[in-house]
Image (cartoon, rainbow, N blue to C red):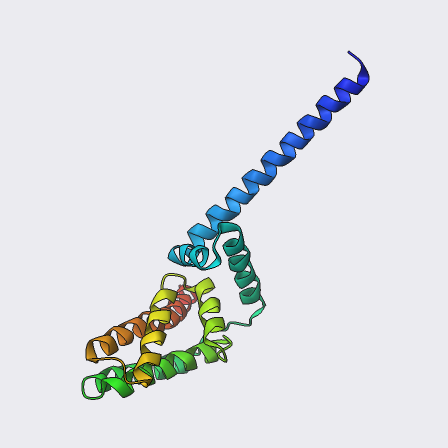
Length: 186
């Protein structure tokens, strides 16, 4: 066999191997993103229209989040926020509308204190989706209800749902700090 045939075969084998590596790596990235983001992955795919665009978006979120200086809450801040949440929760019984607004503000304050940018809701949700993908849907739902409430378009049951959604994120934001504190002591 002439040498040029061996060269063509070798090049074809190398191209095939590189193709397999790229395909496998892409699949691993997809699997990693699906595992990390869960339902948020599916929502992003639906919104973006295809997996490749969604995966670029999710990877961009991870990179943006990695640049943030997310810091733990001090024990005093943890206690203060927990006490304020209990007060807002108690107020919900008599004043659900204002309690939902207070819950929104309190979640935003915790996020700000932790180092998340809070000027734009979509950015907030994207940043939270990286660290807390299981509750970002709750956060979006609560925010949507809160906006509708400001227009007077919600009843008490929807306000209750918004409050429950805010509580899910609030709990995650505080739980992660308590868990880290307990791990550090052990």
